[in-house]
Image 1: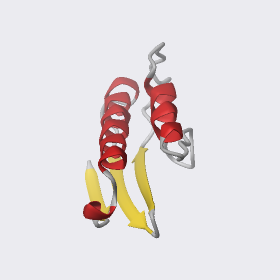
Image 2: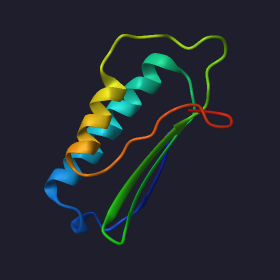
Image 3: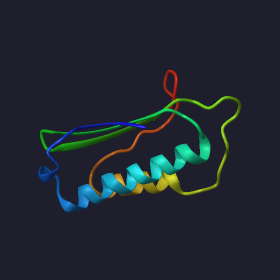
Length: 95
């Protein structure tokens, strides 16, 4: 896991900070579950009143594990409640 923090976290509200933490936590749990052994990059940015969390992982060999969990929908709900948005899916060499 590599991390990059390009943010003044004092500039975000407690609610946004908690959402970033919980979405990041769930994202990393999903990597462990669906892409064990993957390389992961986590970036946090705060710009002009907007916070961005990027979690990118390499794709596993073979088929990824499928689950019936609430991870992605829970992330969307957290973002929606704060007027944000969540995007997720395959991109280039990862997810």
